Image (cartoon, rainbow, N blue to C red; front, side, top):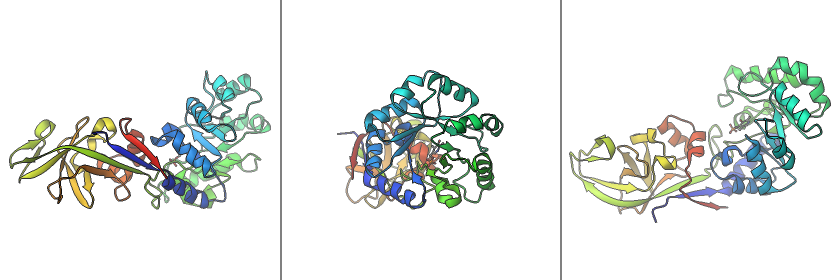
Length: 344
Ligand SMILES: *Cc1c(COP(=O)(O)O)cnc(C)c1O
């Protein structure tokens, strides 16, 4: 079988969520947008619900509806994109709570679903999503009178604890919300790690639950093992792969493995990337192809049957460094061709 194996450790995922939850006196929700960061929203959210998560965050109403079908009643589903044109039936039928992001969304929501729950997303300085302070001043009385389920904002620089933006956004959020009755939420993973000033009533971790930075103590959640299809010896002067970008200087055992950039093994990682066979590092040789990668297995005592790219010793942030990106992009790029196995 040439299919690579993506192993997802749900007990590590639950342990990460519990550890983040234990850092705050606040309620811990979980962010499961983008198919739970590429790991599979149904198994991931079922595991978290079983562990006690009662509030989930998604980006789109469609994601929320799929989550409702998977988890049934009794959990709160908050939709970051709010109430978009055409969403009313989904929001009503799936009992979703849209986070209202603008005066326009507020008007749309109240016209279409006047008695339906909603939350408020405020912009505290990131300038990405949320009601601006001036618009909030105009809407505030009416919105608060209608009883928002949650009032939230999002931090731009929480992965840099010393960044001055954190305190700036904290005081902007406080200025907009101090004294209100509704529960408040500001912290994702990074904000949770910033400490209790940032926790308010609900924390919203995502990446830390999935084992990524900035939660350095996270347990690894994913492992990726890729089968070797064939092995050959190349002699000094011979090349490997497209464009002849790697040339042997000594006799080299080359394993061709069965995964590539179509599986989310980002081509830009190129020859920085390294697989492992047990404890032996095995460097990528030349360019990553769509479905295949050449790897140097000269140092392996036995010809390996498979090579490991991700596990507890080599995580998504290491791959991200090789590719010049972030762990979030590595996770959400993980392809659909893997044999995905869940355990724990
Ligand atoms: C994605 C997202 C989160 C989760 O962020 P992490 O850094 O993955 O913990 C929380 N809140 C909002 C608004 C988001 O968009």
